[in-house]
Length: 307
Image 1 (cartoon, helix red, strand yellow):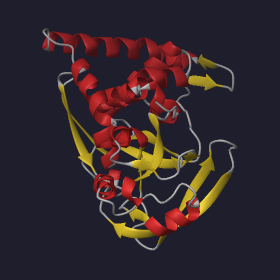
Image 2 (cartoon, rainbow, N blue to C red):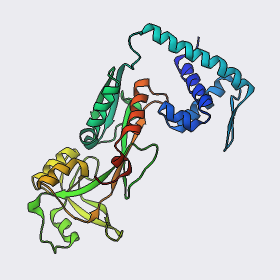
Image 3 (cartoon, rainbow, N blue to C red):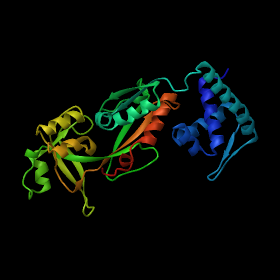
Image 4 (tube, rainbow, N blue to C red):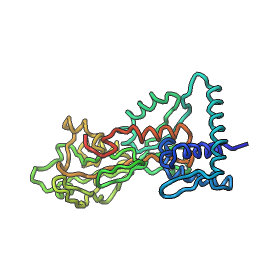
């Protein structure tokens, strides 16, 4: 009797054969090409024959692969029919999917996407663990993680679900005169450190002049330390120093004048978001959420374009 993992390998093989390429199959499955390629290699090792001959330009089924495809497609089709019989009133996915993300992402970027995902998959229960510190995904009970990285300029990519612009902000009363040099202003007010960024000592900021594109690094003292970005946001509102936050997350405060940009005309970089599965072969619910985030993230956050 085939194991669940073996059936999943057969499903991936059928999708590869039908799509004609690993990349196209990966897109349909909501996985990375590397994961799908590994699955094919694992299946070939399991059955002991080469199923697909791969070159840099083409993929061709071997005679063994053609035989395997015929039977594998029948097995997958039979499984689909069995599920339809077992659940005649519903073809939706059901069950939990657990995902971890930094607090700013979970609060400022996630909710509209999760609301739309819930409407498309009402049987899936999404559980969000907001955590700024790095979570050991492999040893956790989570299914997915949003991993973030700093980028000096906007980035795009099939594996990225967002590229969010950063803004260095402070309370209006902390701003000095218009002629105050930026270095002196940052030295005077300092920056609020968090769990995901230096919490003590100094922090180096990469600053780009949007007028001429010149890039420089500025060293800023850490004045206060907090445990996550939402607390840093609050501390900035209270005048405890500058805070480097997602621009979309402080848009309301900037518009209302509760916060102001520390350095108008300068860019402080971006944060890219990548959705990462815990397991090589995630649950269907996890695959569905991954695919949704990659496909439906707002265009401006995928490209880093400013609103």
